[in-house]
Amino acid sequence: MTHRSLRLGVNIDHVATVRNARGGGQPDPIRAARMAVEAGADGITAHLREDRRHIRDADMETLARVLTVPLNFEMAATDEMVALAIRLKPHAACLVPEKREERTTEGGLDIVGGHEHLAPRIIALSAAGIRVSLFVEPDVAVMDAAHRLGAPVVELHTGTYCEAVAAGNTKRVSVELARIARAATHGASLGLEIHAGHGLALDSVGPVAALAEIAELNIGHALIGEAIFTGLDQAVRDMRAAMDAARGASAA
Ligand code: PXP
Image 1 (tube, rainbow, N blue to C red):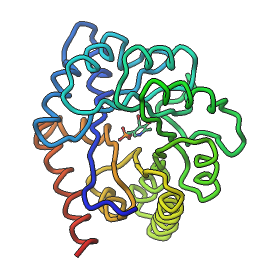
Image 2 (image 1 turned 120 degrees about the horizontal axis):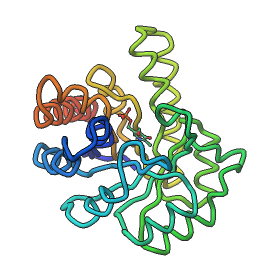
Image 3 (image 1 turned 90 degrees about the horizontal axis):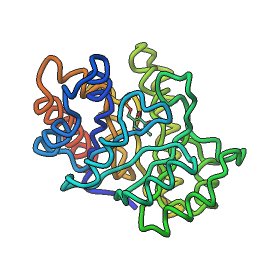
Image 4 (image 1 turned 90 degrees about the vertical axis):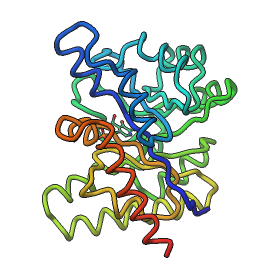
């Protein structure tokens, strides 16, 4: 399926990172979420990590209560997180691999190897009315595996592509972009809803946003970083405009 419009999910984790650096309540991730929505975010994403290094349980509770747009609860596929999600009932849960020592999520879930014990968790979350997505590598075989697992949504990991953009490695950029495009086309042909995210910034978002099968992008670090200079409202508006321009140009 191709999507005319492309949703923007704003990840507010790093507002909480800054808050936690000092203790106390400032800057407030809930205020950031509200501001992002005002500026055009279609949804809010927050990752409650096992070590609670940024978003905390109370943040998730408040987001689930006050948001007027869909909340995407990013989480490891653990019993603790599944139980919490079932209690809070966010619109969506995005299952990600999580290692304590990593700085951010490095690589997608190993669903081809089947080492993540995902099936019962997908079933439990879905039964609670939560839309499950799997954060995976942009790979055709991985799309087949996600489909077999019964997840309705995959989020394609764009980190390697974004690293190539940052390094100015044009050959690598086109290889990685082609991988993302192939996975998106194949996944969509299987009936999966296709999302993408990780590392996306103003200089890398366009070619991904132009892929018609992609329904949603989840973006955090670059927006919060840019917000230091332009303000969060402007950062979200600029990202939204870049996404819309790329999608509009590809549809024309
Ligand atoms: N999507 C997923 C599944 C992620 O784990 C992350 C990082 O938390 C993002 C999107 C957003 O990545 P970034 O903060 O680099 O924009």
